[in-house]
Image (cartoon, rainbow, N blue to C red):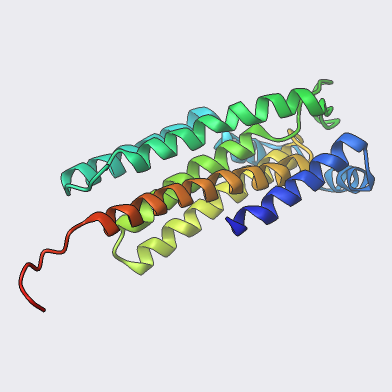
Amino acid sequence: MLLLGPPVLLFALITWQVVADGPLVALDERLSRALVHPDRASELLADLGDVQVAVPALATALAYVAWHGRATGVDRWWLPPAAGVLAMALVPALVAPLKEWTDRPGTPAVPPAVGYYPSGHTATAVVAYGAATLLLLPLLRSAAVRGGLVLLCAALVAGASFGLVRRGYHWPLDVAASWCLGAVLLIGLRLLVSRSSRRRSAGTPSPRTGPS
């Protein structure tokens, strides 16, 4: 549970600065002006956070996790995929009211509007690719494959985040806040799945029936 503290506190700090128009906002706007350069590459990277791209990737991973668990006779094989679905469903449930409450305007690179904080695309990328990675890792035997999967996840999230800022779709703080929000959801997912796994292990009778 201690792992939840840092991302929650950092998210609260960023949100306070955005709502209060604090000094971090001025720094954020200067950083945005230095980074924004709309082009085709940044737009394609930003698309990695689209629901139409990230969610099918997660769904594919969840389907494999469910199939593998059922095929190998894992008790409550449905729990990890269901937890992944719940984590993804919580993204719009949390982001939408936060956007309405903070009412932050967009960058000069987008048409005048409000509701840009936090970044829904970033949160979608973090949770979709992160949840897929967390649930697939225990099924992979090769350390090299596991490392490659983690690197791929990091690259997809970083690419989406950079694209959103570079294209001007979001301020950097919008993206940073969604990293924190996504981290909270992924930590919750990890805790839920690991606790369930420990309960199953503790409740599984030993196959040895004779004296040891």
